[in-house]
Length: 56
Image (cartoon, rainbow, N blue to C red):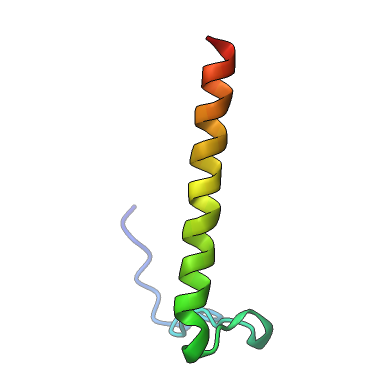
């Protein structure tokens, strides 16, 4: 058997996924959002470093 060559359109096959309005970030807040995510990442790295030092 080969591939399904059906030409019927499936549900949502031709559309892109949409972001809900409550999850969208305003264009003027993008830098603030990136900075907060980088800060969270930095805190996780520091916490991991501290945990590995305690185990040694």
